[in-house]
Length: 359
Image 1 (cartoon, rainbow, N blue to C red):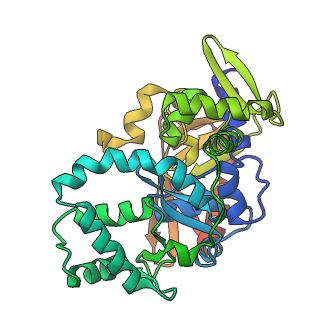
Image 2: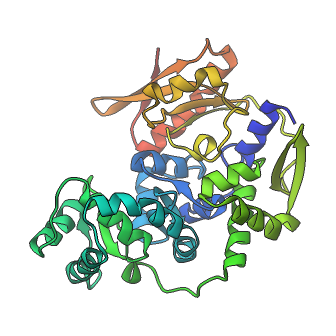
């Protein structure tokens, strides 16, 4: 495989180039989990893999509880399918909790503090209620929990990682929280080896071709756990080597993917970029600084064609319409510029407004 072939195959496995899903939960389930710290971008990540869907339709899936936003891995927000949230938290969140323990001690967040927060949150949210972040933190403050800087984030994240809280639907533009036990039905726990194998199967089927290191970094697993997961899933995967590096993917993925002339407008934290530890197969190192200006951790939306990241893009509102400006790393071929017409129309359908490409 060459780098463009790897990128093209990833577009297929991620259902960007070959959508197969019928519902938002299908998209999220197929990928295993979908990065969601940028909420609006995550909605577009799902929708671009679900032809004809709108922003309102994806938000409806959140409100109807078929997809759940929480912190299942690496201390980072993701969307997961509702039936997966509990076993993924049980498998992956303990490492993230342990990694945050020192910072929580610095903030004075003791086991007793978290016990009190659970009690106050249960009282505030019981009966299926949802509260915006500010409202829930205010309830904790009234209950005697000091809301000094940074404490609120760590409290909510920790309680979500424990499987106590999760995000609910937005109230206007504000995220809300709910009790996970009231939001998602209980599910039987998975045995650890089974959970590792299932996570590996989802990852490589939904992200392949990818390496063991990519999987370990994406899931926040130790190298040993990543190897165990891959071993458990290997029967349904195939391996291809490039030099010393092994790439794994679903056995049903075509061995080759020809350039199809399509182009894509992906949001900043899309799995096509964020789902891998090594991004050199789809993005030249010299362009990385333009993807993450100032190395601030904020990934810009990307223009992708022929399996490669060719530039970034930005949306601006102009009254009731939206404008998209493209910032290529080098001048885009004429064919790519023409191909952008389709994702622009698709993005406008998603937003429900006209979208115009400007230079």
